[in-house]
Image (cartoon, rainbow, N blue to C red; front, side, top):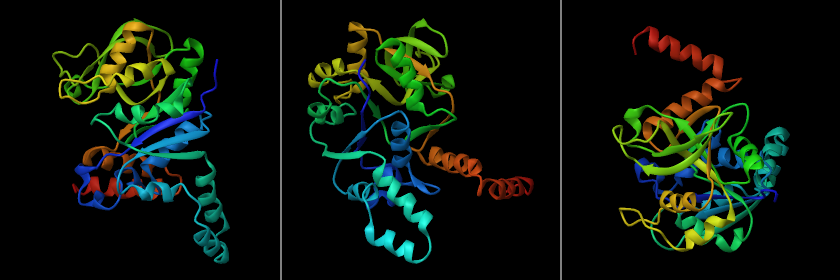
Amino acid sequence: MKKIRKAVIPAAGLGTRFLPQTKAMPKEMLPIIDKPVIQRIVENVVAAGVEDVIIVTGPQKRAIEDHFDRSYDLEERLIEQGKQAIADKLKEIANMANFIYVRQKGPYGNATPLLNVTHLIQDEPFFFFFADDFFMGEVPEAQQMLEVYQQTEAPVMSLVEVDPQDADKYGMVSIAEERENGVVKVGSILEKPGADNAPSNLASVSGYLLTPDILPFIQQRMLDAKGEHSLPVTLNALCEQREVFGKRIEGKYLDTGSHQGYAEALVEVALANEKLGPGFRDFLQERLKNGQ
């Protein structure tokens, strides 16, 4: 079984939901207290043993590259000010992995980033994670997926249970077979079907652990009903050829892709912070007590 050394993170979106904030700042760099969203995604895959992080970017995304690069002047200034610990933390960000950047080109759709990096993946299994949602939990999401892969040697997708009324927001999976420890064999993905048509209450979110046999399907540029190069459509084709599994991820799911979700993520991360949490919890309780 090959070690999973690579992860692909698409980061070419325009972030129009967060304009004007994202006019000059990549949406992937929106801060969750003291870290941008994309750093949390990178930390997730590095914890599972990833060495090469391939980020598929677009125009005005230079801030992502700068964030994961060394800033020698800033580090030296911090050391001069006696802030060695902060300087070391900045250095660690750049040393987490080998960072590779590819500009996105090709048809619109969430499978296009993979089309752009097939030459870098070649015949290796790899992670594919979006850069706006993540899980908080004791065991990193990527590690939970990796454990399923080590047992099955098959593709694995992250799953979360959602309210049936939210089935119009996610790709909902049909369950071909229940396994132990929150694992299911996936029959197919139905994109945003709504409550009446959802095949289950399990939504495909956050990311995937994919095997290289998906790449020929990616190169076929399969389109969805909107004419977009679709990863769910591609995965459905893969499901017809081989077993694909899903893992109910243990942890708190946070989606920063909307204003509501972003605000909730800020609150959840702040409350979990050892230094910030107690005072922030008191603040919230006081606000609620006063009906504000």
